[in-house]
Amino acid sequence: MTATAADQQAASTSANAPANPADDYSQADWNSAYGNVTTELEGWVETVEGAIPPALQGTLYRNGPGRLERGGQWVQHPFDGDGMILAVGFHQGRAYLRNRFVRTAGWLEEEAAGRWRYRGVFGTQKPGGILANALDLRLKNIANTSVVDWGGRLLALWEAASPTALDPVTLATQGLSTMGGVLAPQEPFSAHPRLDPGHHGGPRLVNFGVRTGPRSTIRLMEFNPQGQLVRQRQDRLQGFAFLHDFALTPNWAVFLKNALEFNPLPYVMGRRGAAQCLRSRPGGRGEFWLVPRGAGVPMVVLATEGFVFHHVNAWEEGATLVVDSIHYADFPVVKPGEDFRHVAFDQLPPGRLERCTIDLANGRVERRRLSGRCCEFATVHPQRQGRRHRFAWMAVAQRETGNAPLQAIEKLDSDTGQRWVWSAAPRGFVSEPVLVPHPDDTAEDAGWILSLVWNGARRASDVVILRAADLRLQAVLRLPLAVPHGLHGSWSRRDITPTAP
Ligand code: CO
Image (cartoon, rainbow, N blue to C red; front, side, top):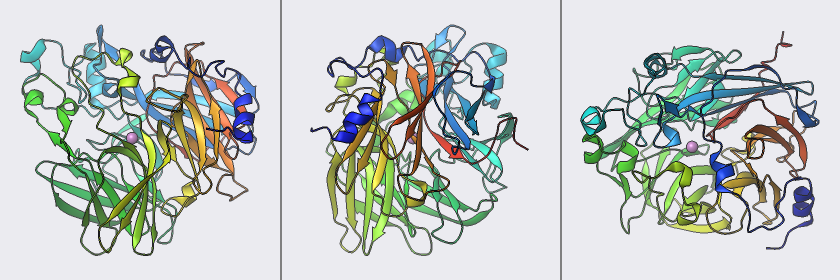
């Protein structure tokens, strides 16, 4: 690949770019992020390099596993860790930090007991071996996957159960939310809501919940900014569906049902976690499940081979739907007994940004690759949700090919193929980039990219602020906190700093 001038410019702003791209990370730096969060902090962030743009006003919320060990026993997989919310509020060039665990019923019970009392979906077992775990199919809502500020409340999300409501300023846990009486007790509510910027009047938060088995039921729900339900539907479709995310257009909710099988026996018998019982169906192809947001029946369209966790965006072009997603050649299996700290990245399939074009008239799907570099956590400008976008921002590996830890942020111009890269390698590890639109500029790439970065040299977390247009580094906030590699977050215009009126 030929580096563009912008690549070089962005790379030159990275103080720790590797001398040799082949030496892009050490496993010890990467897995040094896996520890328990032991403190809940609140205060102004004192250590800032560069300058926080004064126009950057609002709050970055971010969720991820913060408790990975109890009573000397580590989780089998970090995704089983209890959720901890990080909030970084920006006010007139200063940043204010709060972090709080989500005090779910299970968290409170296990804190009191000082040990795990629930099995984890990703293989964490209770103490006591198979006998203690067999037939215990209770789920602990760990509220660790994403967080969104909607309807006056902050919602900590975990896809297999209902959201947990938090005070958006103090992060104090308020309890399970029914979304204003919409959800039945512990009804699933995905961790991947989409924000409709106004395709049907005002903004909406659109989300789904799925109950699966030989047949799957998808409930689609749309909420206005006051948190009131304005539209919903429920559809039953044939087949077992692992649905982590979806994409949204003005008229469609787009799901990709991966070609997976679920054999629950090892889970029921106490030998594996539920997610460890998922296997890809050999030679199988997934299906797009296209659910109309209004009236009409869902369409089922045979997809191409491979596996998808996350979609980037989707839009309509006449009688076709265009869906950008991160595709893997196969389902990355969660192997029992594997130590997550020593995961062999080069044995895993890389995720790649690809575009599927679905012809709604004949059900034909064409797929093409937009970028060959291993990526995850891609995003677009919030006003482009459901509309054709030009720019996407994503976390990428430092190396150009194969799977490797995410160490850089890339901006991709899907019209021209031009790329901009800011890298935290060799000792830094990025997380999901969150795009903050510029308050006074509606251009698609005006604003900032925020990302929590694990600083392997400091063994602590930084918040990095990049200019969205060219990924030029604006500021680094050195947090007095070590946050494990985490999951998803979001931006809110809310001011959580003590200066707020
Ligand atoms: Co996700």
